[in-house]
Length: 288
Image (cartoon, rainbow, N blue to C red; front, side, top):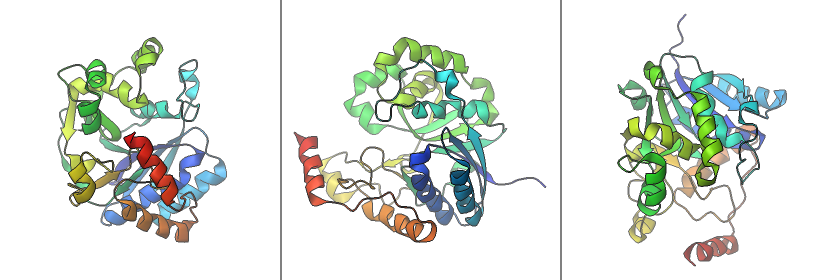
């Protein structure tokens, strides 16, 4: 029988299995009429951790395939500073590992889905990659965005990406990406995002902000009124993380509500209670 599930892709290591559970729970419960095939890329999950994650996905009515990433292709490249690992590069491998002629929606695991994402699968695209513009980088890191993506193109955020394999002829050879990283490692600030923008920004369909709504503040008024949050289908905690004690961004209650259910049902345990002193330290550090 044909599988009519919608394809989703994620990249995690062992430290992010709890975050994946919360994100996927939000996907499934916000889209109860849809079923998904999960493509999970990992470099460190144990068999026991895979069994745990499979159980969660199955209980939520979907299926899962694990991809054990061979990171030897990245050997010798600069590692990401925040975890001294190649994990951030693993996203680049999605087009070469997944074999499908359809659409695959990639989601970071610092995301809560609170609306309909089926709409994204119904659309027709003329490009291999579709994503939402990164408003903060385009506005405040304009020189970097132009250098990476090209002056006339919009720099996009790579936390939510629709891959349309109908246009697989537009997939950039992996060797070209590896060469670019080797030659330009010092210029890369936002890891896989910079790399994908360098190769795909010139041929990317820009999606509406509601499909990748960031919880950082764009302005003083946004800090009070949270413009766009109500219409958002996908909420992305792209900078500050809501599971840390110093979180000061938007949509905290949204995350906490989903986290609480997952803690009770599947034992996730990675979030810290927010602490006013930690928050004040972050606020003053951010301002000054």
